[in-house]
Image 1 (tube, rainbow, N blue to C red):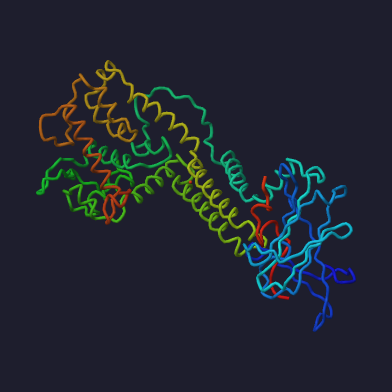
Image 2 (image 1 turned 90 degrees about the vertical axis):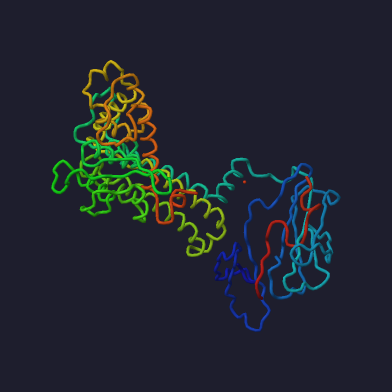
Length: 490
């Protein structure tokens, strides 16, 4: 900004509400008439159409709260353009008005627009000048692309988040030595329980891992499961505790925790309905899931809880999104120009961080070795040949059933025994004569009811899991076009 003697003035620029605010300190400007020149450079100020180039310029702006006695706009055109080749137009009035209270004349090397009446507060003047194409060199495609990037740079934030997450995953999220080949294994890993093996497959705990634990405890003689019919005719299942569990060295803390959930923590209680598990707890599965992750860390399968790793990345995503929403208000004023794009970029970046969270949990070297064993055993459970199964001990079907449940291959494991002799389970009190089809049906019903009970809250099961070439000459108005004006007070 310059005074009438072309001396540079002290000035301050800010960007409130998607506008540019310029404050200048003019010496001696008290009850005096002063001239201040504002010099600025604008990109994309000349619009290019097929039949003409055009300057469509909001010269004064329509945000002034004070009247404007008269306004004059001078437009200098490139050399070589004849007067007859120039088209002019203009608009006066409030934002969107199409008044023509102006006069235009040709003076030496420029065209002058003059208002013919005083402009009231929040009125302005917009000018249009058009001339044949070929007299102005327009920016290259590369430069225009650069401007688009500069205008929408917040949309690059998700790309940065993607690259950063990829670097973190490459450095810390990959499993060590994860190229081990998988070969069939005919026995499960000796140091794992079915729930650990099931969660190891995809680094996530599922309700079926809890069901597998319950069935495994039943197979090992700690409890029995019996289908019953309630007084209202609904199907239910009764758990019966068969032996004392206090101080049992064969039980892991996780298994004790699951038993506590089944029997409500009352070790004197020997009978419990599955439906009662649903009604007693606000949230059953999350604490069991967290306890399972803790066990897997203790057993050296993971360096940190997969749940906490995912939660950390989800938290980072939420913080990124919130920060993006708050930055236009709390950050430098120029960020207000990018308000919409910044918010969108921040939300997308947050989603990218959440997405990376799903793959960031990684196993230890021991976990990778155990996973290879688990996958090999899963392969066997799915594809076991009948002649091999016939040579195995008689209790093989029930003993490895919890593992099939944890792996999600229960139906395939049962199908493999079709035509083979399978003894009735001692842990499941069937209502009739034992047969594999009827047992498969009842086991499926139990698994469904158990999953409902595990996932339920006091609000009910349903609530718990979920119950897109004319230019300004033909469409112009006051305040339209590119902006060279402004507003405020004198």
